[in-house]
Image (cartoon, rainbow, N blue to C red; front, top):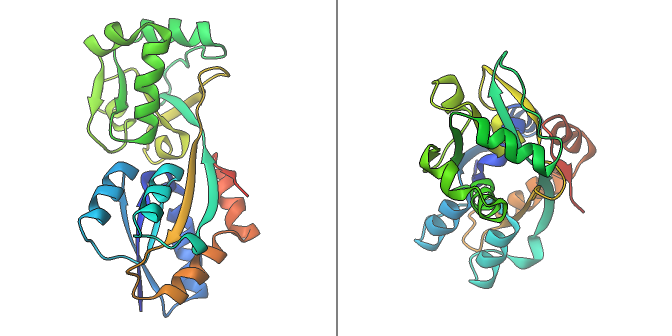
Length: 229
């Protein structure tokens, strides 16, 4: 038996541990997780791809429910994922303790990496405009279509990487400088639901209930994720 799940990249780090736990408890139900930005997940499911579950941003899950592609009654609120900044391992960590210090540190960087497809990148694009530094950062930014922005630190393409902290932690050879400060932070809220075309809707519902168990919440917390109720 196989549960097919489309999930936002936000959860790929904790699921490196959670998948093993689930398989020990449910050896007859294998997890096949397809990792993508939420925008890509919505587009893919609208194009007719079959799966049992979706784990994505609140907006994406709401859109899928409104379109009849996900079951509203199965929906759960999962975690909030704060956005942070990383540097290559061993590099000095910038001062991002306040809005003004964040601006100074971003402008002092040789290049800042972000992903326009991910929810954190969408927010960061808006934030740069609010801070009045959009043009300057874009002129020397390292913008990737999707994936893990911290990889650009290891490759030497950027000094700072912006993404959800749980995603930054997926890349080895980096250090977390910290979360975006108050006034600039926009945690990404994640929901989940059983899809209308699920082949295993009952088992999918069991999996969603398992995601709310204390031992799962504890692992989410280890990766900087905050439980939503």
